Image (cartoon, rainbow, N blue to C red; front, side, top):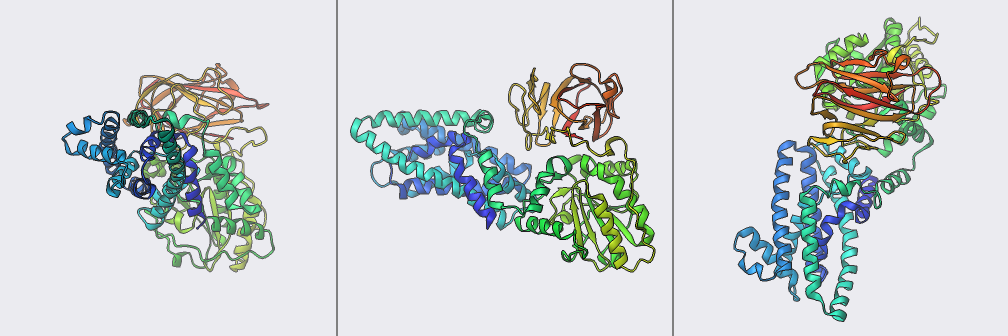
Length: 606
C-alpha cells in the first residue's frame, strides 16, 4: 500500500517536472470542452496507455522498445495532423488518408462547442500516452526496476497505473483551471481564433520537441523544476525508517552497494532488518525465520548443487557478492578466512554471485575472477536473481548467518562488523554441538583493492557512467542516450563532477569509446580511485594513461597502473587506478585511452 501511495504522489509531482511540457499543449487543447466528456476521457486514455506501454517496456525486451518507437512515430504523425488542423481549419477538409482523417475528426471535435464524442477524446489520450516520457525520478525508477525484476505481474502494472493516475490528477486540476481561464478569455476578449491557433502552434512545438528527443534530453537536464529531490524526500518521509535501518541506508554509498536494478525497497523487510540488527547485540541471537532454498541458482561453481537437506546440521554463511563490487572485494579476505578457519568445525560458506553488470553474468568471467581471488568455497551463480528475491536482499555485500536447523539467526549488510559476525559464527557452532570451536578473532592482512577503505577523508561516492544511474555529468553536450556523440570534458570540474572527452556512446550500463582515442575526467577526494572497465567486443587490450592534476601519478599509482600512469585494460573487472599516500585532498583524475572500444561502467572509492 505504501508503494502505491508513493507512486501516486510521484505522478502528481510530474505537473512541475520539465518533462511534462511537451504534452501539456495536447491536454490544454481540450480546455474549452466539457471536462467529463472531453478532458477526463483524454487523461484516462493517456494514463492507461502509459501504464501498459511502461509495463511492456520494463519486461518485454528489444522488440517492445521497437514497437513503442513505431507507436511514438504514428502518434507524432497524428498529433502533427491535429495541430495543423487547429492552425488551418480548411486543411482538415483536404486530408483524406485514414490517419490524417482521424486527426481531422479529433480537431473538429476539439473545436465543437457542443458535446464532443468521448471516443475521440480517448483516442487522443492514447496517442498522448504513447508520446509521454516522464522524468525517471526516484519513485518511477523504483517502480520500473521492480517491474524489470519481477516480470509482468499485477503489482507492477498497479504501481504504474497509480503513477499515471497521479499525473492525470494534477493535469486534470490544471485543465479545469485552464478551462475557466480559456472561457473567460473568449467571452471578454473575443479572440478564440487566436487562442485556437496558439494551441495548434504549441502542439506543433511539442511534436518537434518530442521528435528531437528534447522531452527526455534537454528538458530532463533542467533543474529549475526538477522533482527528484521532492520525490526522494517523499520516499524518506513516508518510509519513516527505524534507527537501524537509517544506519544501513547511510552506509550504502561508501560501505555497501544497494541493488537498484534488483528489487524495489521493501519497507517491512527493512524495518525488520533494523530491528534484527539491534537485537543481535543481545546474548541470545534472534530467530529471523526459515532460510530460503538455494535451488534458484543457474549454476554452481566449486561444488555440486547444495540443497537444504545437504546443509541441515551445518552452520551456513550465505554471502551475496559480485566480482566487480569494491565493497564485496574488501569483505572477501574475512569471508575466506572464516571458511578456512571453521570448515572442520561445521561451517559452510556459500557465495551467491548476483551480477550487477551484464558482463558479470558470463560464467567464464566469474570463474576467472574466483580463481584470481582465491575463492575455493561453493558459489551459487544467481543470474536470474531467484536467490536474491527469496532472501528479499537489497545489498552487496550481504551476509546471512543460518543455524544448524536451517533458520536465519543474524545478518549484516555492507563492510565492517567483522568481530560481531565472527562471534555469531562461533555461537552458532557451539549451539550446533561443536566441541572445539576456536574462540579467537581473525585478523587479516589485506592488500591491493581488498584493503579496507580510508573513510575519514573520503568525500566521493560510487558514480555510474551509464545513463540509467549517472549523476553529476559535466561534459558538453549533455549525455546522448544510445548514440555516439562527440563530448568536450569540463575544464574545471567541481567535486564529484565528471565528464567524457572524445566520441563516446553512452548506454544504460556503461559509456563505450567510439573513436581511436578518448578520455574521462573526474574531480574526487579519496585515498583510492577504482574504475570498472572492459575491453571492446573483439577482446583486444586497450592501453591507457592516467594523470592526477595533469601529471603522472608517481607514488599515487594504483595496483593496475605504473608510476608513469600507463596501464592496459585486458578483461572486464574493477581496476585500481589511484592509491594516494599521505594527506588526502581534492584532486583531478584523468584517464586517456589510446585504443578504441573500451567500456567504462562505474567509479568507486576507498
